[in-house]
Length: 321
Image 1: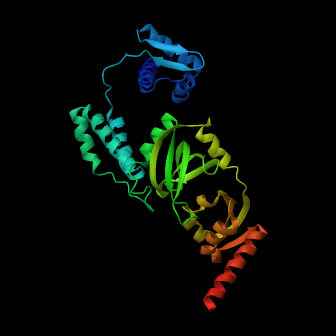
Image 2 (image 1 turned 120 degrees about the vertical axis):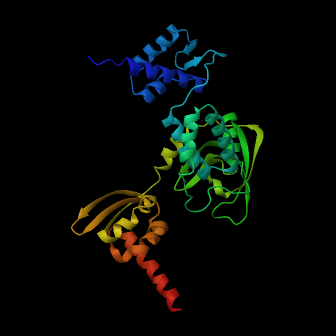
C-alpha cells in the first residue's frame, strides 16, 4: 500500500509556514492550496497542536498562531531561490520605482539566509535572466511612489487624492478616491475605486496619475471585493463579430486579437473563421479591421460592414484633397 507519510509531512510543514505568513488563515484557503479536503486540513491542524504548536482557531474566521510564537528562519530550496530571480526581474520591470526598491531590499534579506552554494548558483544565473519592457512606461516617473501609496490606502482604508490626466480631458483634474484594488490588464496597471467627484466607481490608469497623496480621511463606503467589480465590467454590452480571415495573415493577429474580444476560431476551407464579442464596433474594432481588410471578409454584423465603408469613404476623401 502506498505510504503518503512523507507527502503529509511536507504538507504540514508548508501549512505551518503559511500560518506564519498571515495573521489569520482560513481552512478553505489551505485546502485550496494543497488540493485536499477540509477534513484533511482539520486533521493536520490537530497534528500541529499535538506537537506543541500554539494555534488559535475561531469558527467562521480561521486559524492563527498565538502572538509571540516564532520559528527559526526558514531555509529555501534552490528551486525556490531560483523563482525569486524570475520574480525580481519581473518586479523591476512591471512595478513603480519605490515599490521596486522595497522589493530589492527584501530580496537582499532573502539571499542573506541562503547557503553559500545556493548564493553562488543564484549569482551565476542572475545576469542571464532579462525581462524587456514592451510598449510605453507603466508608471509616471514623476510619481515613483504611486503603488506604495495605493497599497497603504487599501490596507488602512484611507482616502487618496489624485492629480489625474484622463484620456479625454486636456486639463489635469483632482480626484478623491477610495481604492478598492489594483489590477494589470492589456499592458497597463489600473487602480479601481470609488470616485467622490463622479459619485461612482471608476478605474484610473497608473501612468496617467500626475500626483498622489494619502489623506487622513477614512473610507465612507463599504466596498466589495475587486474581483466582483471586474466581473461586472465584463458584463458590458458586446456585439458578436464573425470574420473569415486568410490563413496566411491569421498568425499575425495572434497578439492583438485578444484585445478586441476574441472568443474562438475554426478552419473553414482555406480560411479561418474568427468570432469576437466586441465592446466597440463603431471605432476600436472597425479601425483595427482596416489594417488587414484586404485579407478578411465580414460575415456579421451588417453594421460593421457599413462602418468600414464609412471609414474608407472618409479616408478616400482625405486622400483626394
